[in-house]
Image 1 (cartoon, protein in one colour):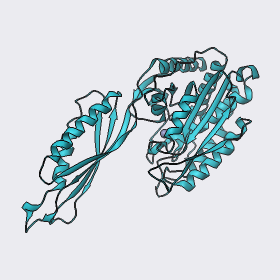
Image 2: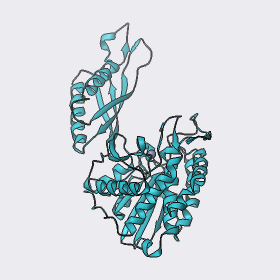
Image 3: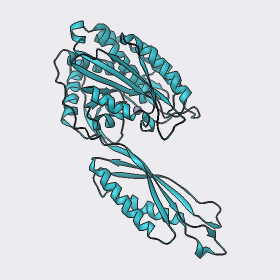
Image 4: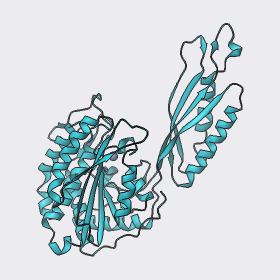
Length: 401
Ligand SMILES: [Zn+2]
């Protein structure tokens, strides 16, 4: 099986180049549909059951729909594993970064090559290897579900409830987000949320009756200063004010301003702490004459703390790496992904088994080609050893969502 994967290097590279050339930005349904068709064709041969196109809807966006791809096999087996990934990217059709560049080196550059079309190809290759080369007696011990969603880069609003269902229906999960620097796996991930504070004041002529005005930008600026000062007050919590909007002609006291910020959390309890802190700040602002401030937004991803179950999986995967002749480490990271949501819903998972690379979400996004077969072997070997009964199936995480 491992030799077969070694022979797939060129095929894997070609497939990633093909998939990354296809623009599938999260807000570009035509491109997403085209990408989904490619995935459907690629994953079809892996199971006697045809892939299922899962329609996704979202109450707050009633005129839109999306599609996830689900493929299942041997769901009656004693060990059930989820292999998950997203096929959207952050690069919409208007983004200047559209081309895949091969320059004969070990690097392949292109939109989504690392995050995470490369990972999808690693998943496909590992699963193909296991399905075509593992003996029947091994395979019948392992059933799987592949779930590929189109909206991870915008916080998986369309697919969230399906992810929770995936978490309930499987014993453990493998996700193929890009590796951390040096190939390291993610042991824990911070949670993430996006919020906005809308401040309303009162417009007035800056020359004729400025005292009638209530300057919303001034209040928004006060909010920014106070919320930014929360940084450093609580371990692992970070608030990033990322955008402010407001105002108009310079001779009018501005009556509206919006402050948008992202928060990162380390522990589930941080969400309550932040909510209370922000509410207290907003209450003070609302005490000012003629001012109305309101918060909206949500914690889209709960934190994914280190756990005994994920540590067991990380240890087993690192042991597999040793057998393949390299060492593999892991570390916590600030970035959230669907692994957070799956863990919060009770599914132990290792979520960045994709290739090594860099420049994610930028026009420098690239992967290291020699990591493709390495990562595919790592995942395939894990499946094999799991099916062979050499590895323990981790206990369920305590569901928090
Ligand atoms: Zn990703």
